[in-house]
Length: 426
Image (cartoon, rainbow, N blue to C red):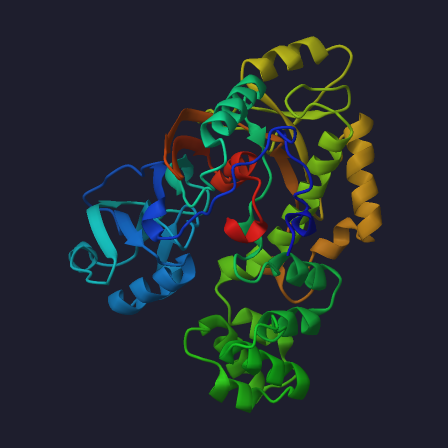
């Protein structure tokens, strides 16, 4: 799949040659340290707050394993953000379980670094951002990696950030189809969404691919349950529902963890946002300089863009809006389309409406019938992602990056400006 199929159609630094390279040859090549919002400690607190280190664990499988070891449901485990599966990550998690049991957890490649009790759980979004330490490896020795890095870094510093595209991980690294499943749901095709997830072979000839192809052609759910390997945990959960109730596609989706179920529609919204951002850049409209009609996001009490209180840019306030944007106190936003969306005005509004019309969708479509948890009201998202503490070191055919990003911003979208590699390398 090409990155343009995910809405990633342009670069801020398109005139600077990419250095290529590969990410995540090993989990240690992609280190993530969450910048957390710590719940207040309380000796009588019901919940355990723990900083958890994990290596090469996909988020849902990690939560499932933690719940199994603690003998609690996944609903009693909270986390602020989903980290890249192929990484070494440290993040805050909460547990509705005895602190002694949490401290005693023994799981391969998982460590409880510290733990205390508090009166509230950790919820999605309870973080400020993430610190990254990333190696880009296997760069062609003939490439002027240092020259590329110097030029791209200068351009990003001048712009105050990079295009805030949703990265490949949002759509699925191995099978980038989560947005297509979300589109099926928005279009009311629940059966199509389920079959796209559990079948839909890649055509690579692997045992898994053969099993998916068999299911696609036969709809034999009993056979699929026997043939699908145990590692396809979520596909097997859905197939298990369907082998007893072959037409219960909503029931099959409900077998998934709620955060995974929500991800489908969110991924489709992300695809639409990426298209919007690409089109603005293609038109030559700056992503960091407000224009009349734009909706800009002020900062909240944590110093992050406030997605819930956009301010319209008019002839009367444009000078102030541009001054605040230049100082990093406000950000031009793009549409995350949903059931209660607010379009921008001006050229940005034209772009947003044109993309929605081209897709043939309307706000009410994002109220997913029978799957309320998959529905989405929509919001706004900053077009420019700021970064802090950027350090770049070239070492032969490897380049090391260190930087911090706000929550919801993708390190791979920043590295894309340096690498300009095939989507499969991210």
